[in-house]
Length: 214
Ligand code: B12
Picture 1: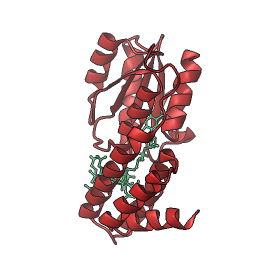
Picture 2: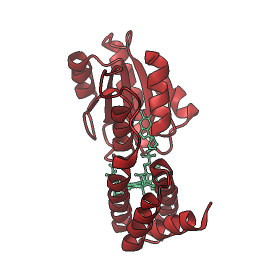
Picture 3: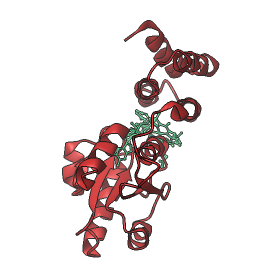
Picture 4: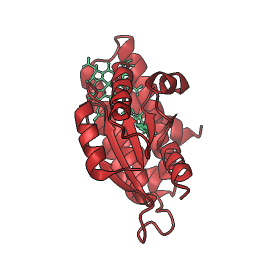
């Protein structure tokens, strides 16, 4: 990791908001890859999360960390390159939401943004989404891909419930389901019955491209 990258991770994880935003601005102005800047912020979030677990940080630090990431995200997003032909033709419909019981949405918002600029028609139905709402929205929007996001451990059960209900309603035949969020891995994918998981927003785009042969 380069010196300025290390400094950015440190400033975010040490809650030095002005310095963090300034460092991110300088990196973006210097032409650094905006996706790299977002990835560094995610690394910093892991540090914040670990300190929270150890009782060194409390809820206000989680809130501030979230705000810093949103601010830096707002600076980075306009600089992320659009995929070719994205404006001309939409590649397919993707419905995205954070499962019920979970309010974390920063990662989901990045996924929505990346799908959008890569040419997919994305409908983001927000956070803490009840199973019944997913079912209604699938009926109305008819997505080819459903993306379930969640960061809490309890979200795994919500994801499993959501997938099961979609299947029970006969809505799974023409739709793929991908899941993601900080702690999601292959074991969680297997537990929830989803088709695939994605570790980051680029992976989410890759899965949709593969499934829609776009
Ligand atoms: C910021 C934050 C918050 C903010 C959230 C603000 C917001 N608008 O989202 C606030 C303060 C609200 C919050 C609240 C809480 N939080 Co919190 N929070 C975090 C923190 C620090 C960062 C999360 C984050 O945004 N990461 C950055 C994003 C970019 O990463 P991401 O979500 O993983 O997304 C990427 C990928 O996963 C992927 N992805 C995401 N979604 C999807 C979907 C699909 C389909 C695909 C393919 C990919 C994909 O792409 C994204 C971009 O690359 C984490 C710690 C950590 N380790 O990160 C704790 C953490 C998630 N929180 C935690 C906890 C405990 C809580 C609270 C319960 C605290 C409390 N006592 O009230 C509440 C829960 C509220 C609720 N019901 O949801 C725990 C969860 C523990 C657990 N095992 O369940 C964590 C892990 C901290 C910890 N280590 O203890 N939190």
